[in-house]
Image 1 (cartoon, helix red, strand yellow):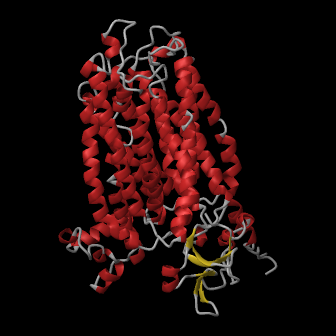
Image 2 (cartoon, helix red, strand yellow; image 1 turned 180 degrees about the horizontal axis):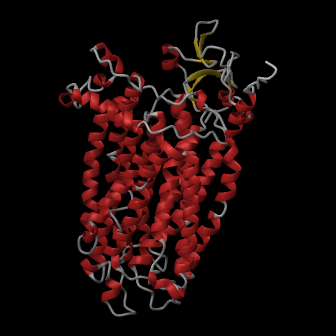
Image 3 (spheres, helix red, strand yellow; image 1 turned 90 degrees about the horizontal axis):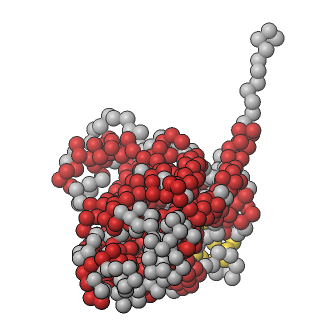
Length: 612
């Protein structure tokens, strides 16, 4: 990734945009030139915007695009996400076995097994149906509640405050989980729901806060360190930092590996202790970041205006134009006023365009749930599949962690090799193309789950009852298939790589296509698609059992292949659109900047009435 760039020597009143040159400048106060004009023209005829040289139409099609340098705060926020996700996934990874499997008969009473045992770690012994229902309910809460908390952050409290509250609630949940996993109270369950509520407050607000820090609001022309004229592309800049964001998420998710081993070797209390210790780094890190972040203040949600736009559209024949060109034109204030309306509008035509883009984004997100099901299986189906495989003494949920490991290995390759290579060759791989590739890759990978399940049934001593074979045959007999657990790595790795193209792209779409005061809400709608996939898992939980597991994998695979084709033909035109961030340079202020602005405002002169 080529980020060693310099700006042309033109007047640049917005100091933050100089991130393309030197990161230290990002620590200066971003100030607007309130006395000058936002737009201008250079000596060679280029338009400028806040001192940035805008590319001409010819330059847009001929110059190489690069990702601009991002401020350090972006990467510190990625570290915050790492710690939170490490604690979340470190616990989440062991939930299914905790609920599904009983206490091992050869264990120590803490959920662990004897060394080298073929038994899996467990505690509650509720079976795969209940395990699916409970883990999917946990996921549903963690990804459905963000809609409320994202809206609340937009309208009343702000994103950073909501992040801090979520961290506090999750901290309490971690402590309760450790206590409830000690032998005296082990069989009573765990504080799973509280963890999901804290995660729901944190998750919809962290990715918009990362993107808020970006100083690259518009595409602009610079000359890099090699003397080449290039375009700093806001989309490439955001995609680059969000790749690192997703990398840190998955490094955190790798903590499921030690917690899986700890649950099997020591017990569940130790599996929950490690994420809790790591979680303790969050409060001091957030305290350090607090004065250094650009925070979008709550501005009241634009949701009410969205409904007003829709009301105007449907009141003027919009119902007949759904899905056709011109649908959104009827809601624009200029069109309504031209038709004789005397209504006072609180929004402009650009807001209506933002609403149109937001609805497109929501339409894009609707294709995610089936892909998410293919990425790891329906409910606890994958966990049930591995319970019948020959693990050679390994925890049967260990290789699930290859999902995160694969992403950790692939993200640097994509960020430093593949994407820069495409940019150097002038190939623009648009957001819809990337997501379509990810959907297709997820579908291909999920085919392997069905194939593996078929051969597990075929070779299991219990045939079509492979998942519960250990409960059927006497203790001491072989209860697993001859199919090696190592084969399970194939679908896990392929579907994991698909996430790099789908999830990372969705972060940028959610932010860039949302109105300024709805970014938290739209980000949460993206997250809510995981809740939809969890709801599907809940609804189908009774079917996640022998002998139906083949179709638990094959059904979503077929649906995923069909939806991938529909997705491409529905949204491919978006690849041709120019990437737009509808926040501006006036939003690039930290708390310290606002305090300085207040100091610069002269105090009112007191008038002594007696003297006058």
